[in-house]
Amino acid sequence: MHADTILHARWIIPVGPSSRSHRLSMTDAPSGYGPRDHPHGLVLEDHSLVMADGLIAAILPTAEARELVRSTGARSIELPDHALLPGFVNAHTHVAMNLMRGVADDLPLMRWLRDHIWPLEGRFLADDFVHDGSLLACAELIRGGVTCFNDMYFFPEATLRAAEAAGLRASVGLPVIDFPTPWGSGPDEYISKGLALRDEWHGHPRMSFMLAPHAPYTVGDEPLQRIRVLADQLGIGVHMHVHETAHEVMEAERLTGERPLARLDRLGLLNEQFLAVHMTQLNDDEMALLRDRGVHIAHCPESNLKLASGIAPIARLKALGVNVAIGTDGAASNNDLDLLGETRTAALLAKGVSGDASAVPAAEALYMATLGGARALGLDERIGSLEVGKAADVIAIDLNQIETQPLFDPIAQIIYAASRQQVTHSWVAGQMLMNERRLLTVYEDDLLANAESWRARLVTPST
Image (cartoon, rainbow, N blue to C red; front, side, top):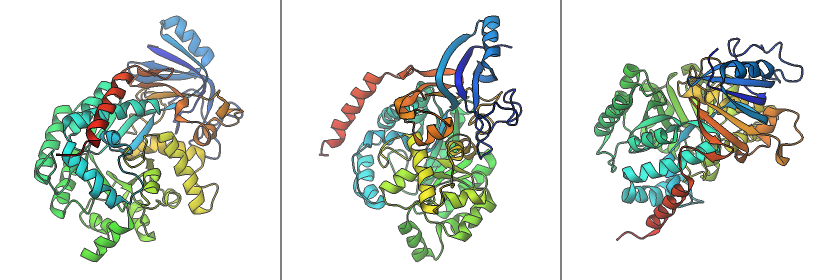
């Protein structure tokens, strides 16, 4: 067997394993480390993960893996107190908005947008702003265990360059909105520029694309119909804010007599390639519709809480079989990109809202943050779980810390007790991006200096 790097870990958490992913099946895993109340709850003790050519080549008992080290000369990394798991998938971001973290807090969505965010974007939105904000965000994502993010923002070419430089995997939205911005004059130009960008980057092993109309209240029927046709022709998904606030839904009903989700269904957009972000305002019929159409949900609980937008009913959606992923939204409304913290919030909110302590158990929450996110982006054949043949997108979490001891269940400890500061290592397609908390692909001092430079510019009154 060919091997580049072999990781020897205390635990491996494959998430949704298949029979081809390792030699142990869920039924013959060691006592105490088999499935816990959920099919995604497998934990393997004293196992090693073999990387070769950017892929996962094997998951073996550590004793066998040590023999492989001797026979292949592969690099060997000891992680005796760590859990290995798939890298987190952040299913909804606006990474460039890291430069606006904390610029306007404690406001409802529309006041936040109209009085603060949109005016600042009118002044500063440009390639350099998006690149610098995206690179700052990439560093934060890596430090928090995210190996893939799904973005929606203008100047997506700058976000692509930042993700490429940082070594991350990215699903980049091709934005469409009815009104002009510094990136384009209207839907026709946005679509044209987006398609040209996709053609330029098509085939990149770490970059993929989704069409990204902003929201039902900012994109009209004609461009949405064109987006539906393009999505079908190109075989790519559609990523859109939907039913984010009660005001959005009420205004749509007042002006058109139709709820936004019904309109999107009438236009043919709701299907297995559609990723609906937020979804805090849903009735029973709409939840059934989402199930029937195979729509994916990007749940962003902390941004929704901070903006007082509402709470998505994810326990009910999950019970119906709707795939739910986790997103942070942008740092201007969250105010962080901490997907592990976001996942904990999602799990706890589901319990509190439903009145059911078993709603979204820890293993299911971890699934939403990994393979559920990969499914939502159409990437689940490549990432989201630790299986032979998938990309070696892997993170290590040190659980031998005061905050996570004593340890009875690694999955529960990760979801309910661990912090992102305990993520020590990160690999994407076999490339190490972080080693013992040290970033390897971006330079922290440069990022901090650049962030301060942008802060000074943003607080300077326009002339």
